[in-house]
Amino acid sequence: QVQLVESGGGLVQAGGSLRLSCAASGTIFAIDAMAWHRQAPGKQRELVANITSGASTNYADSVKGRFTINRDNAKNTVYLQMNSLKPEDTAVYYCYANLANNYYRRDYWGQGTQVTVSS
Image (cartoon, rainbow, N blue to C red; front, side):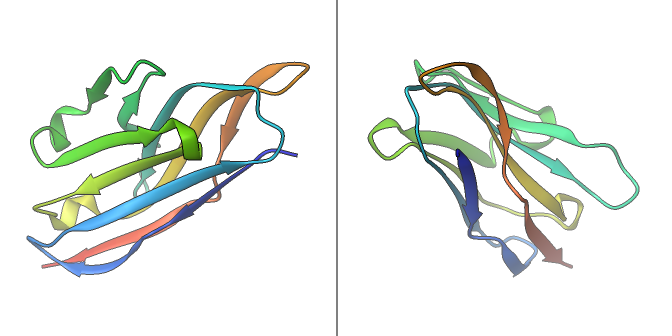
């Protein structure tokens, strides 16, 4: 049973920083892309940043220059460093991974972690 477990969310003032972590556990053969998405109240879930197994990254325009995604393949973990946070960054942040066990490859999602930025 594969699980993605997020941590690091919380309440921060505008201009502050948070670091999110997401660890994949269970029977894992290989992890391809990993990503962070977010969903604000009343809005659709959107991609924040993704990173390939080769460490190529992609960011939403709204977070470029402020957020950094990286991964530790030895720990099956992806991180999101969020700096210069704004109230509009307030959302539930979800970790995503496309990974394979011994039998199949599929998409997995974490349970979400709340990030609240106060003005």
